[in-house]
Length: 268
Image (cartoon, rainbow, N blue to C red; front, side, top):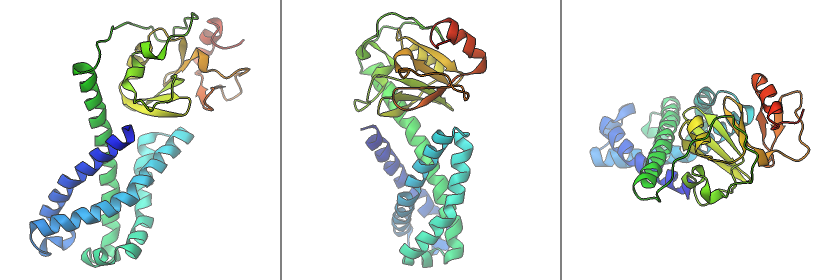
């Protein structure tokens, strides 16, 4: 459901973008018919480019998560590099559009523009979706009782039900709970479950606070891990990572190692 909402937001955003681009008429297209005709042709071209660029954006984001390289820089330059093979694909499948853009020489700036445009629209859709969900929670959702949780605290009492965790109420019904870990990504928090993750627009410390009394600890400046999510028999390797029950590994900051061991969160 969450992905469908974002796709619908992105497709909706393509309409005003096509209207603006059709009005401006870049690459000499201002000579090809009236405004409505130009806007329609640009919408078709942008949708074709969207079909190519959107999966590429997903792939670069997955690479950034897997390698833990800076997400923003890797995705930006990855999309710029991807615009070159996209131009070759577009040359093969978009014959009429290639002539409209002035041949292959016009395709390179077109595909680069489309890659940057899809990145911008996806960025806007994520924020718009998060703001819509926050508005729904505040104005139409159930009343919540606000509680505080200290960062890095590791209460060792009984597990808390998922329905009682405030952060869980921000997630879609399709989220596979319980919450295993929280990972900070720029201005977002990636909430990891047993079979997938979801991205929420909020600060990590606010997300930790909304975990309420769930036993866990902040293992790194960008990670919080639930105590129950540590894999059985897991030990801290040379890479200072702790394996989790969902197959991920959470990093352990060097200055947090003693604190986590003294609290009993990690084995000695």
